Image (tube, rainbow, N blue to C red; front, side):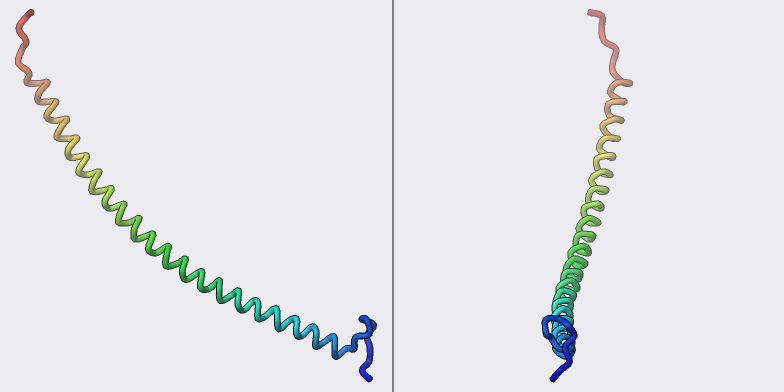
Amino acid sequence: MAKENGNNGESRLDHIERVLAQLTDDHIKFDDEHRRLLTAQVLLTDTVQKLAVTVDRHAAEAADSRKDLDDRMGTLVRMMDDLIRNRPPQPPA
């Protein structure tokens, strides 16, 4: 008969087998969770890379739009300056 260690009549071998089974179950759960985390990391990295490309594209478009706006504003300022400086004198009313 197996020697008991005082744990509700459980033999040392039974105790070792129970602990080993628990460790095995925990390791299987850990391995499954680790695989899911790696999958999530790959998906997240891909999404971040796509987002970075989109942000870069929009930043370039915004820079082009701003340059166009600056050019048009400069043209408007020059036109208004010419109009004000070259306005014919107004006859007295």
